Image (tube, rainbow, N blue to C red; front, side, top):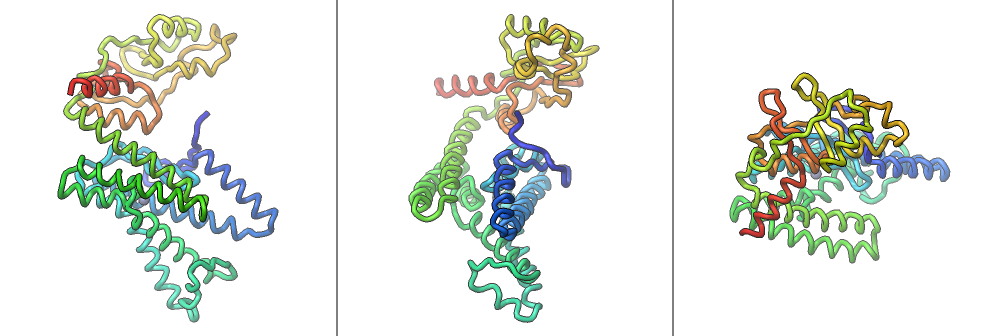
Amino acid sequence: MKESVKIGTLFGIPIELHILFILLMVFVFAISLISGRLDIFVYLSLLFFTVVLHEFSHSLVAMSRNIKIEKITLFPIGGVSAMEKMPEDPKEEFMISIAGPGLNFLFAALTYLIIALIPGGSSRIFPFFDFRLFSFLDLLVLFFKVNVLLGAFNLFIPALPMDGGRVLRALLAMKIGFNAATDIAAGLAKLIAIMMFLFGMFFNWWLLVISFFVYVGASQELESMEISALLKGIKVKDVMSSKVIYVSEDMSLEEFSDIILEHRHMGYPVIKDGSLIGIITFTDLARIPKTKWREIKVGDVMSKDVVTVSPEDNTIDVLTKMMKLGIGRVPVVKDGQVVGIVSRTDIVRTAQVLKLRR
Ligand code: ZN
């Protein structure tokens, strides 16, 4: 089952809702209906609308630096823009990271101007944590507050992988280099995560979830830094297998299962007249009941939009891409011809061996 559902595309970026996010929205909507407090649903919708604005700001700045955005996914704890690769230049990381909170502060400022023009408007801002909704003005005030809170929360907590942590890492990286900067920023992030966890246990359960996300995210940053250092300069052509096992679209799933048994790879390119028309994996096969394997053909269940890479691509970028998309192997294509296949395992094992030899 897919973990997220696509709801649309904006500026060429697919927007997806994670299944947990959908459940949260349904749950909150049900609670609002039962308790007769529709404002709860309004709060959450406004919050996530603002999160989408925030993520778009990151994404558009990244795209202006030629970094492709695979998708934006909304999770119960916020949004994530899946970038094809992380920027290498600290200035780019700085610009991309600050763009999200920056847009929130910009919206807050603009909304504040409108509020200030309305008689009695600015007096409604305080007390700050009073979110009651009675009028359109209250909705504007709420939008102002949500933007201030979201911008501040993301920017002023210097914990990787939150925006504040990325800004800190980028600033450090300009002085002491990317690796040393990541070490410091990730160490600080873990410390903050532990403090958030302790604080969250007593005061705010939301923080418990965030602390977990920060701790895991910081560990992943360290790990990916280590892997990218190991894989530096290693191209797809250095690790791919050139001996590609193809299948054809009119092969039955029964025959396909023999191929898997013989070669024990999890995915195979589907070739027609020398060119790639799809990819079929073990998972595609497992979805179909065995009784139907004789009648159903490879062409019926293969995925048609195939992600491919070039032999000259950097392995680290390809690994990041595969992890983001949740795929295990991709065909390597040169001048329209499949010249090899590369798997996540191929790249990770290469890094492991290089680590041993270091
Ligand atoms: Zn952000």
